Length: 190
Ligand code: SF4
Image (cartoon, rainbow, N blue to C red; front, top):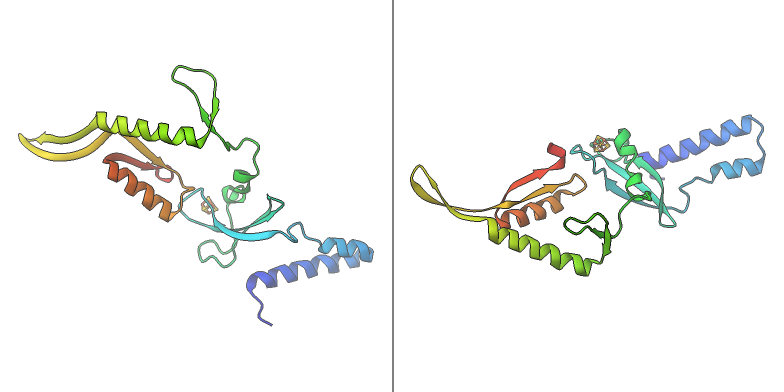
């Protein structure tokens, strides 16, 4: 039988637990229950920790729409099943009552947040980006008395987050540079 490192760890872990319980005199029912893992019947997917540029991989177990297990991915050549304390807490990104799932808008000078739909928010964001870019775009500038092409937008900055993967970062920075942005930064660098 082909046995992966992960399957071996699972099997040996279950075996050790059952043997230890049997030696302590637990009943067959208790022994059976001990084998019922929290992650049984959960769907496992792999992910990459969003918190720093090390890029550790993890296995996330999801049952009934909730994360019920998280562990480092043994097959990852980067972290080989280990996760630091920040990585071990990534399930809180999803299992979190304080997570924002709706667009919230606070009007200029306002004190209260209003819920908006994405249909309302996206055109508004696009309008503000376009207006700000038009108002702050620098086409040329003079350097030591010589007029040169600048083509940069000085009125908008972009800050990326480590939750973005490589491809998303590529697209986000291409988009920003396409608008002429020069103030482009990333959370993992500051
Ligand atoms: S688990 Fe820790 S070291 Fe690994 S990517 Fe996440 S924050 Fe960085």
